[in-house]
Image (cartoon, rainbow, N blue to C red; front, top):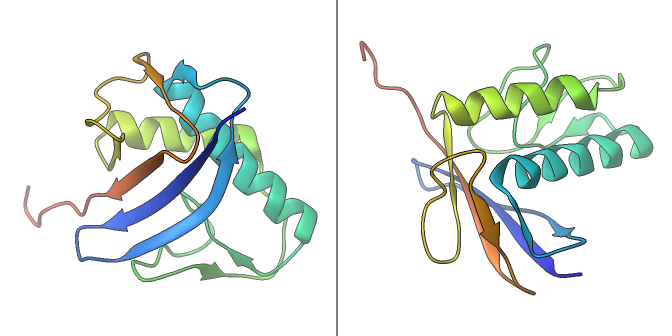
Length: 130
């Protein structure tokens, strides 16, 4: 069971370490990696019942911040809905997944991760007018 470091980055230079993800197997599809990460974030948030939520994708009722976690009064978050939002965001290239040796290209791409590997999720900012 490899433990993989999850890093969120922005094009403005922000870098935030998310909690590590414990994988049952080091071999999985990019879609599964994103899903596992989002589900772990939602499970942690819903169990802790704190007002601060930090995750790959923000629930629709809070404003996304470039430089840190978002705050709101506690309401449980639907993990299935957030997984769908995250997968759509990947398909729309709102973020890219940077693996230890390359960039992930497709949700169905099978990747292999080892103990201590770092996976970065680089959030892209759309260009104005483009």
